[in-house]
Image 1 (cartoon, rainbow, N blue to C red):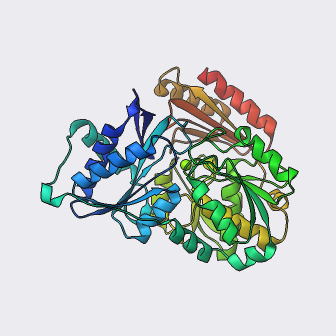
Image 2 (spheres, rainbow, N blue to C red; image 1 turned 120 degrees about the vertical axis):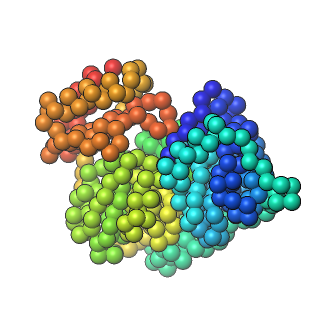
Image 3 (cartoon, rainbow, N blue to C red; image 1 turned 180 degrees about the vertical axis):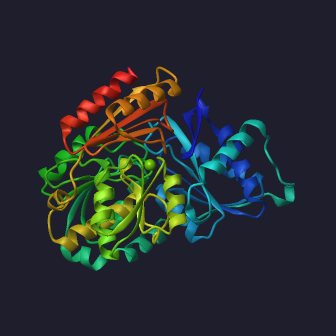
Length: 446
Ligand code: MG
């Protein structure tokens, strides 16, 4: 039985940590914090356990006196957008994002569609383990109304991008939505943008490939795009806040590339600004910020940290390079896969060049990722990492885990917030330097 409270949400395997009782209690306590008469948007991805949890979440909120706008199946960004658009007091998103299908999770959203601040999540965690359901008197019980927001979200997004320019370019794209909520949104946006679309793995709730859209799960997409001569391929995770790009040649890009493309384009068009990324995002973002005359800030890993920093700084653009999550506050304050895909179509149309030519102009680094099982205490590992950094004369940053860097390379070692793993990222312009640093870190971890 595992129930993990993270700054991103509360997650567990359905029936073994996460279940209707847990979902009802969390939603009830969240609703109680918002107060009687508040309005909360509820939505979910396509996981089989989603419907059961949806009933429980609504029940928990209603019994706290909260009214619910139930949007049903929709991408996470669409639900976040709806919280903002309907001026709701909060949102509950039922999605375990990129975790395996047996997992599910609740993401709690505050006003303006922003994930709750990690400090608030911590308070809720304390209440969850110590408190009981907070029922309002029978006469104050909240109501539920089902609404369809997908059409409005799509319309808003079509107004946000340069739709005419994309239509003129007559582009062709393959989408791999992997049975996720993106199936209900991204293909329709592309059709409205005059893009010829071929959607694969589109049956909702049937997860054909691995849940994370990355090179080792996107073999089909990488073969189909060049085989049928399309301009680009895109892949989402189950709740479509993530986006991975596949070039016309079938090369699967690392997740950083999606964010880099959008950041570079937006900062260029705005003539600079403020960029916020997490500490695990590539060094290429420093290069892009410098080139475009923008300021760059880094936060711990997690959408909540990035989004709250973006509000604080009134940032232009931001996101999490490590998972291809793009945040454009002018549209809304959450990572948005369909938006990122549409902007990349605008970039291809505006530049009049192939996606691989456009990506070729981005700064180039080699990033290696590796996950390790946690075999010893983090404190013990941390001490050894600190002395490794000292031995190598590398600068330290302890914003989230241990980050060590010098002129040639950097590495980030941190315990995962969503899984019982240690995540390691190493990056350098020189692949051999990156490999050498990784092998030193590996010696500490295994
Ligand atoms: Mg996701």
